[in-house]
Length: 231
Image (tube, rainbow, N blue to C red; front, side, top):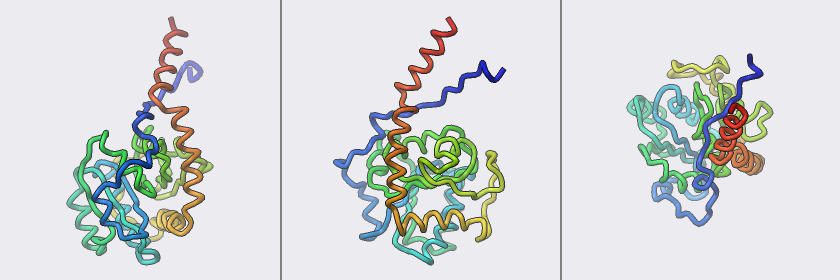
């Protein structure tokens, strides 16, 4: 029976993924022009993580507001396809693929990013999203799977956008989308670039929320309480 099921999610390292203004800016971030917003995604370059969709959406963003630079940390199957899209849409001055980084090297990138983007077509409890929220970064995410629970249908802890046909997870997303389907994502990014403060206010609440509910200390306590009740 559902009443006997207890959901316990994965956790994150709240001591590592927390704001720290003393961290130096990663040297790669100097590619962003002065005054440009630094956008970030930390994901493997697999189809379900939607980086190829973001390249297409950001080309539309650039045509209306070019003051951004998008950095991608990760590697994977669609690296070459993403490079082809960057060239096709002439986004070389706006997108940099950084390759993989170890988890303990990510904090400076998050610290100096202005916005984290999560265009996935499939997610459970996304640790990447939780880490970004822990770092007090505004998050714009696709309205699918576990991202809905993390961000909240009321957009309390970030911004959800309809990109795909369904809220259900799919590991076989489209490789291209028409402009009309990209519009919600494009509009959300443009809204952030124009008026970031409301997004930043949500990020403060999100950081406190994940520290309370998703730290490993909290997750461990949930397991201990569950075992104690069963014994």
